[in-house]
Image 1 (cartoon, rainbow, N blue to C red):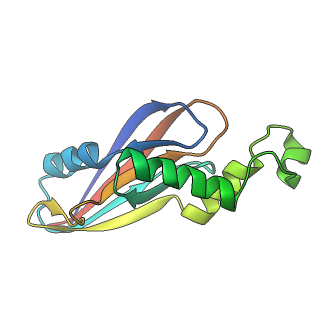
Image 2: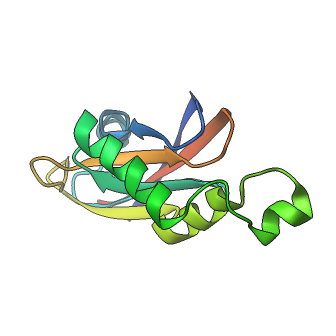
Length: 139
């Protein structure tokens, strides 16, 4: 079994900035030389998330609106009372979405649906420097 680890580093705008990582992750897979196995994508941090979405402007906007309806900004969060950083909603959103996803790798191709992309969401309330871990396991 081979395990290849790489990192993607980038700047975000914060405030539910949604970034398509599919192409960058595919480059890691190709560079790994692994043909069959698993690709794991992990976003360290408690205000970031990894998920999939059809990455088009309408759905990007819809996801942002849905998160605002589910976990709104501007209401009282105990976290904000303790730390006064205004990002209690960011932590809750990230906890609901999750920080990692795994994908099957078959014949060198990440198994995604036709309209499915791997996305990173910066849920914090300010711009950040982010690093995402990509691990490719297999033969």
